[in-house]
Amino acid sequence: MKVIRAKSAGFCWGVERAIQVAREEAQGGERTVYTDGPLIHNSQMMDELGKEDIREVGDYQSKSKLDLPAKSEKESVVVVRAHGISPERRKYLQNLGLPFRDGTCPDVGIIAGKIKAHAERGYDVVIFGDPKHPEVAGLLGYAKEHGHVITNEKDLQSLPDFNGGVVMVSQSTMFTHEFKNLSQILSTKYPELIVFDTICGATKERQSDLVQLVDDGADVIVVIGGKHSANTRKLAKLASSYEKPTFHIETAKDIEKESFHGFKCVGVTAGASTPEFIIRSVCEKLETF
Ligand code: SF4
Image (cartoon, rainbow, N blue to C red; front, top):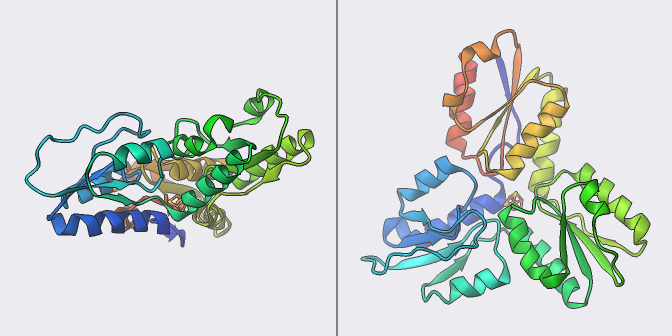
């Protein structure tokens, strides 16, 4: 079976940066790095980082108190993950009394900045995204009491009536066509609506490269990445929408030869938090089928 790989498969710059920040702080295991929730949404990579004493201590949404050991033999440092956090959470982490480093992806930082600037001027802020995702939980904190999260048209219809200005942004990993559709509907009600397409370049690139795999003749698609990873799940959904059999897997162990019987060309892509060593091992296994 022929294997074609998407150009953009694997780490985006925001994830690479967060890992680099954590590794710099860990100093090769000299210090313990505590990340507030998973640094990135890939458990295999988190296991690898664990070997350098980079430990995940917070919860998925960065809401609960950190359970830190009372005494530690080594110096420790707190690192904020790629998805970012709310201003309240930042204050909490900075007050823990440990050195603090921010690994928030700058693309998420830009969204937070736009929300903060408009909420302070009294705008209502509509965020297109998954209300349970940590990035959205963090962004909502910048909107104060002016924030509203929508995931579909039904949510849009349930929004309260706004009297002042309204601004709309997106979680960084959503589909552009869905954001466009929802923002157009909202702008018919609020013609002065300010729309910022904040879906990041890395997400857009991964989505268009997946379409390229289909155009290049893939008759089955493998999407590699964490089950919690929003951008990986979106890639799998996009592949299914092209009516191609799609396998969302985490590692090479999740694929079996029998499932690929009768296919001639497999297109492989991976979410923005999937490490290269996993992508390579999946491609190598597929090439033997
Ligand atoms: S997917 Fe986009 S927003 Fe998220 S870490 Fe990567 S570059 Fe940043």
